[in-house]
Length: 365
Image (cartoon, rainbow, N blue to C red; front, side, top):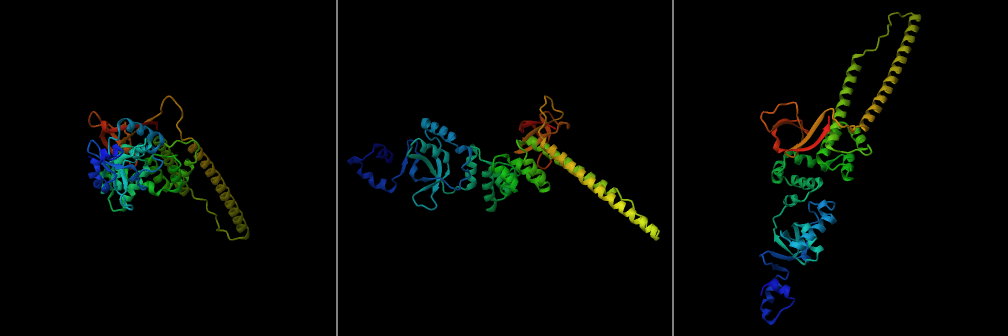
């Protein structure tokens, strides 16, 4: 008589007494008709440090209920992965399958098919979870732990089947400046690439980034980021030009050659006038700078492209090898089916097959 038949029968006949010793040694381990190990749900705990956080979309009520409906109809097709509980003998902790576990509990199952794997790392958990979206921060935390354990970024990228740049972008989420950290946590910016690009801009233009983040109703898309970057570049160029002009203009010198009392008085008068002119110039300069700031802020408030049926200049935003890029429409490709691209993060220009490029967005340049 099998253990599973004992569980289903609800009791033992005299002919089953010989199986009691075996059942006592493994009272919750059963085998289903497919030969899979069944473990009592009451003996399984979720990993409190698993990569997925509470706000992961895969853990939403709607997602779990949908999965529960599938399990109700078809059963648990893929066993969950567990390991021996590190602190409580006789219990298990989930490696992979928390969603299946929750859905099974929701419909009242008492056992669940499982595989015991005591050699399961956090990185393995993240890889196993790629079927359901992980949030950027979940990726970042586990990648950070792997780096701290001594694993090279290149090795991590290979295990996750991602690029080195993708790994670098997500690691940046672990050390964000407060304004960007707040923008990510409150959900205003969810794209890891946009956050990474803003971190680089923040290093040299923190005030402009903070001002942009405060714009009410601002959308933080890659297209808007491109416009913001152009705004910063224009402002930087203008500041350089003003600096060059200020160095070229030399104030007129005062003639002190006549040491007579009258000349000295005239010199003082000239000096006073020069000082007054300098003060006036300074005031005008400060006023002009204030006007420039107002104009700059007004332009920053108006970064969104005008609602028009036609683009003055179209920019095609794409993704290649997990990194943002744009098509270079003014360069002739070497063959049909190819195009020139430019990465958005480091500016590298390269040629690639169009069937490996994913179209992201069409924006106005």
